Length: 156
Length: 404
Ligand SMILES: Cc1ncc(COP(=O)(O)O)c(C=O)c1O
Picture 1 (cartoon, rainbow over the protein chains, first blue to last red):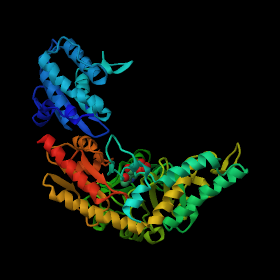
Picture 2: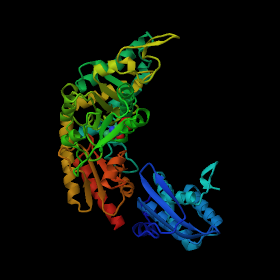
Picture 3: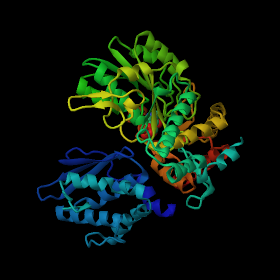
Picture 4: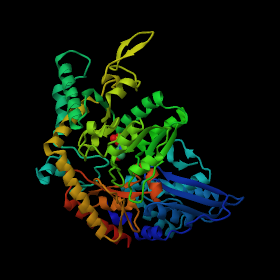
C-alpha cells in the first residue's frame, strides 16, 4: 500500500478546492448519494436539456478528500456531455475502479484520463472504494439510469 | 502487573500488522482478546464440547456447569443479588431489544413517553423507535450540553407524568461523558420510573455494583470486555424478569408444550431460547477472571491516567479539536483535525499501524447536534500506553503534512 498513490496531488488539490461546488438555481434533475457506513453525502444537481445534454452540473456535500475530489473531477468532466456519453464514461470509470487496469472509453481525453486515474489508488483500500464512487452513483440516479442486474457497478 | 506484562497476554501484539507494531486505539469498538480467552474456546471445542442443559451424558453435564459458572462469575463481577438476574444474549443490542420489546409489550401505550439522551448509540434508540409505530409512544431526548455531558438536571427537566422508562448510556462512546447514573436512577425511582443503562462502555472500564446502582436493567457487550463476539449480557432485576413476557420462543425456555398451549420455564431459561453461544459464554468466564486478576480498580486508574495524558498531548496540537469536555470522562478521545476529514485521518494513521475509528460511531443524533458528519476517535483499553498516544499525535502530524 502506498499513501502517495492514494493521496495524489490532483486529489488533494481538488479535495481542497472542489470545482462546481454548490447548488445552482435552475437545475431540473438531482439525486443524493449516501454512504451509510460513514454518513458521507454527495448531492448532484443537473440541468439536462431536451437533447439530454448536461448543460450544467454541480454538487453539494461533505466527505473525505477522496469523495470530494471524485465529485469535483466528475462534474468537470461531465459538463456538456450527452446522455449516451455520460453513461459510457460512468460505466468505464466504475469498471476501472472495480477491476480494469485502465480507462477504455474514447470519449475521455488523455488529460482527463490522468485526472480520473488519480482516483485508482482506492483499489488498494477496499473500504475507500465507496468514497471514490459515491458521486458517480448519485449522477447515475439523477440521470435515471438503471442498474444492470448482473453487475451492480454497471448502468444500463 | 505491569502494562508490559499485561500486553504480553494479548497475542495480537506479538505479530506485526502490515509491517507495523499495532497501536490499537479502537477498544470502544471492540477490545482485543487475551490468550486465555482464545485458548478457552479452543479447549472447549477440542476437549469438552457438548450442548448445555439438555442431555444427561457426562460432557453435557460438564458443559452445563461451565456455562453456569460464567453466570455466577458475572453475577459477582457486577454484584447482582441473584445469579438468575444474568441473562445471556447475542450482544448488548439484543439485551436492549429484549427490554424494549417485552417492557413495551406489557407496559407502554399510546402517548407514553420514553426518555433517552442525545448521546445514545443507535442500539439504544432504534429498538425503542419500533414502539413509536406499534404502540404510538413518544421518544424524548435529553439534551447534551456543550461539554458533551447530560446532567441530572436535564434529565429531571425532561421527565413528565407520561414518562414510563428512562434508557441512558453509562459512558458515552463519543464524548466519553460518564453520566450520574446512580443519581438519575434514584430520581427516576422517586417517580416510579424504571431505568435501563446501556453499559457497553461502562462495564469494561468502571467498577460496577448493581445493588448499589439499583438500576432496573443494565446491558453489557462482552466483546468490549476482552471477551468473545456474539455475546452480551442483560442484567435485570428479578421482579422484571419474572413479570415481563418472554422475548423469543423456542427450545430450552419452555416448561410444557401442548397443542392447546405452552407454559414457560423458570429463570434464567425463560429468556434464553434455543442453543446459546455456549463456547463464548464459557470463554467469557476467562475474560472476567482476567479482569479480576488485574483488578478493575487498577484498570480504571490506568485508563483514567492515560485519558488525561491523551487529552494533554492532543490539546498541545493546535490543529486538533477535542470533542467533549465532560466533568467525568472515560477512556474515549474523539477529535477532529483542521482540514482533514476523519476518514482520511483513519487511512493515513492506519499506514503507521495506528488503528482508530472514524465516522459517526453509531451516534448520528449526537453528530447532528455537533454539526459534524463524522469525527475521529481514539479509545483505550488496558493494554494501551503513553507511547501509543504519542504515536497517535505523531501520525496526526503526518496527516497535517500531507494535507498542508
Ligand atoms: C454505547 C454503546 N451501546 C451499544 C453498543 C452495541 O453493542 P453490540 O454491538 O455489542 O451489541 C455499543 C457498541 O458499539 C456501544 O458503544
